[in-house]
Image (cartoon, rainbow, N blue to C red; front, side):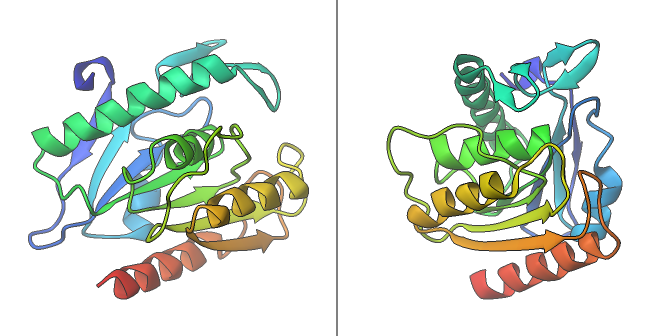
Length: 209
């Protein structure tokens, strides 16, 4: 599966076990979020795949039927493919499987949320910008020890407030340590949002250490 994903890998600094799994939004690619990774966790390794679904020529990680209406069978299948990619990349690049944190925006945040719900234990944690509920899992995931940051916009036209709150509930019901930050913004980043996420990530690393 690793050969099926166009991706970028950047080794981490010597002695730094962390890996950021970068998951771009619609229309992004394997390079789109590299500056964000540098701002969030300098020194961490970076694993950044390109979504394999095209929507009007724009890469995505899974199909949707309309804005905010997801193709659930495709989402489940693509989540499995991405999980296998991560497992194979961890082996190929000799990464610490217990130190992989997803960083996703929009569509990338949604597939990361799906990874947490359907493949618990694959990720140490996640920083999710503008995520919404990807699906309601049939079984409650076991997410004890997993730390999740949801960074949401109060005026986001794509993600209703209640939907973001429901996602936080889903993670929390599985035992995850969830932080939900609201910003006076829409679907775009707010001033200071990345810096706050970097502080959260640093704090999460201290707790884990």
